[in-house]
Amino acid sequence: MYLKKRFLFFWGIFVFLALIMSAMAEDLSGTWIVKTLRFNVTMVFEVNGTTLTGTVMTHPADKTEIKEGKIKGDKISFYIERLEHQKKIKIRFKGTIVGNEINLTRDDKGTLTDLIARREGSDAGKQRSKSSGSI
Image (cartoon, rainbow, N blue to C red):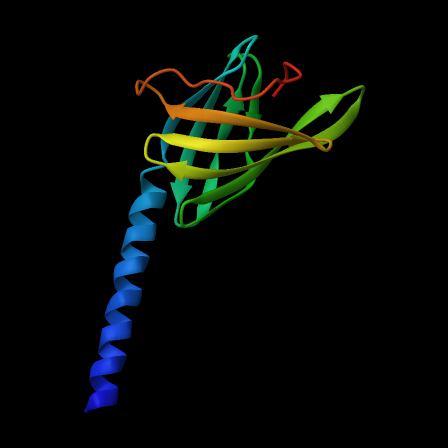
């Protein structure tokens, strides 16, 4: 009887945590804005379970597809590809979701930049460190 109660207790905690993580992931869908020194970056996220898809754009003509997007709890990761000197480069993003903000780190060929993405309409996003001016 004791083992059965213990099992049910831990199973209940597992289900509860799974529901919370699922709700957090669903909450990510929508438009997020990052303001840099030179321009705004718009990230449009779509969530399907633990898969993150969508686009990143610095202006309407510069829409880039998110690749290998993942969500695990309050953590996200993805990359985009850019053409630089006729060579494809990967720009990687990792972040932590905190309410209506995502604390992101952009890795552009080893140069790390910390950014804050804010849900559209929840106040302006802002940059926390100097950037090369490209996303």
